[in-house]
Length: 293
Image (cartoon, rainbow, N blue to C red):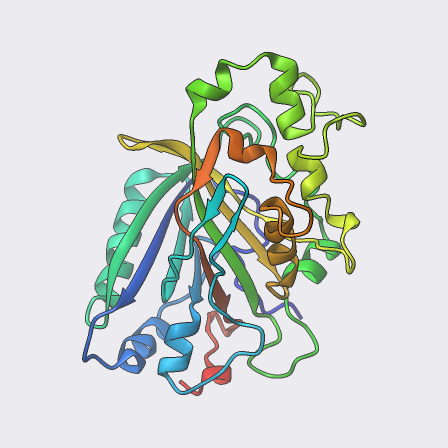
């Protein structure tokens, strides 16, 4: 039986709110987590915990680590590791706002919100560049095998790891390029979403081709566009049964293997980066068995 948080593998919602929290000094996080455990978990909420929080509870989750700070020729990938991540999902912005406020109140005695991003589904699931996001996502049983932990025992089976990054696009710069240049940055034709066999090695599709890694580096992407007064971009979200697949892709994107950086960096840059562990669900509530809560 799949004990994962149902929102992880559910189709993308129309709207999302992403929240990141850090601890309030001199507070006991266990008290807040017990309140969080009392909250029902449905497809409209996914919750994850960072390595600092788990360490602060004097516990460990095998495979959980801090997001790496990487740099390559002309690119920088920052680590802004937070302690709690909440993905509030739905179709009504007012309801999402109230749900997020209620979550914040639950966590407020021990945590404060340091990042809030509102995401939305664009058309059939496009990035704001107009290109489809997550074309190669595993589906069905393959998605479960890719994103959900299994065979690790009670408290871990059904859990998942997630990588999150806030990317800021320079859409004016991207739009100023000829169409074939834009296609070569992505590695697909905008007109039909077909992969370009003759795309340059820097094309995003080639840099992150999941089957080209050893071992293969498949993830389940659940990214969504965002736009506000500060700019526009993509809230990148990728789930996996470990963090290894995402990190292998990120290292190749930043040229750690061959000094060739991903074409995305020509018009976009990440301004945040965090890893989280998303515990399983038992009887409709978060199962904290693995961290002794």
